[in-house]
Image (cartoon, rainbow, N blue to C red; front, side, top):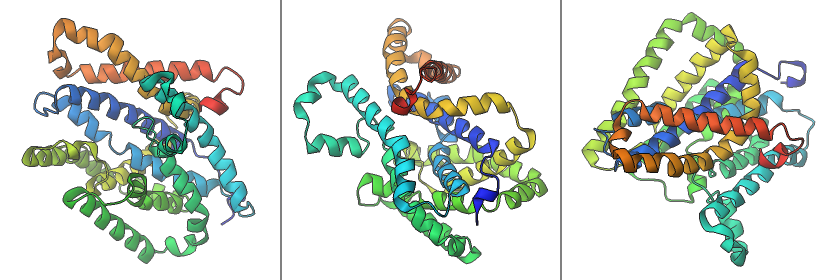
Length: 354
């Protein structure tokens, strides 16, 4: 399909991107609270609930990536040109922020260890816990032209069913039995490939998705609300029964992927229909990549300069209040987007910082 003669921009996708980045911030803000509560889900249930209902964020990012790449792909673009264009937009900020996080954690001492191990460390996304996403995204960039060439087959119902079945099996094994034994980035890519492909397929079926949700709106809303509560309760139950926090950190499980698809379809419809806060969300979307990189640093600094002294005065009981995690999330989000707004006013700096 020649997308050059069709719509190559949808406001709802930008809006979903903002929702996804805000959800990432919510995950990170809530998890630091849970860590300081020693993962006691009883006293920290509010933070746990926020953490789990936001876990659609990373699968949604992969879904959006596949959607946008396919929507804007030009058939005549060579593989090298495609990869260079896409990778250059993420590699420079990725490397820049990797060094920022290394300097923050280790100071300038890393300069004494400039070798291939450091290069490998950075390219694996190990400079900060959230940077793993970029190497996996680049893996999907590498695979995209191959997927695109076979999309005629991949979007057939039997192929989609087979992809979903294979992905569900891998997710089930990894989540409920044992993590797949392989490089961590390859593991996550293998546990996420269906979302990327489904995004590509969805870009060719925009009107069908909108029609389906419109026709079954009440059912989709009820399903979304049910999953909104069932996903956290399921993870809560597993964590209590097995006396482990590992399930809290792992968004790669079948139920969460189903939740992500329902969420994406519902809000894709709502946002396209209402065009809610269109101008504002478009502007915020331009800042989202920078916010992805900077928000963890903002969280570190805010926690150490504001929250730690506060806990010394009041104790950790303040972390258990229902308002603390939302306020922490709001503070980190506001500061991060404010910094992004200022940085993007400086010509060409965003090419380095994101």
